Length: 129
Image 1 (cartoon, one colour):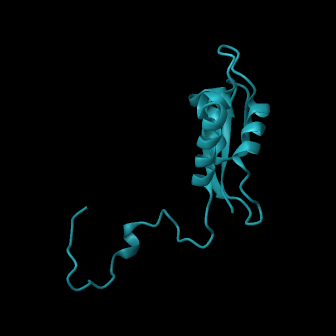
Image 2 (cartoon, helix red, strand yellow; image 1 turned 45 degrees about the vertical axis):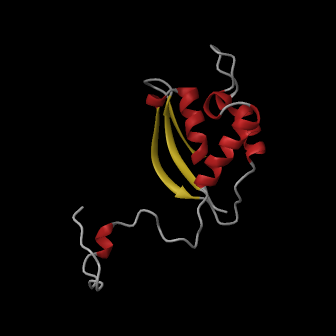
């Protein structure tokens, strides 16, 4: 199933920055490794429909290799964000599932403004928001 991809910018120093695309569940690990104040989400898109979400076991291993360990704690950045062992893999799977996008579902971010001008439904109660 397609999933959310984030286009992020990482400011490594005043003179060094990079941009890259990452799956949405990778953002907390990237932020832990670089510092929350150094990572900015610039855009969001959906992966190709033929691209399947990875298993949490495979993704946990990929993120451990990519981000390695925190030198001060000795713990991997993935484990510090999602937890270690089976619990960490389960938590990562939850985040992967949250990032999955059903291409047939209506957009989640549709606003109430889309409903303005529709005829009233008999018996409906009006509320002020």
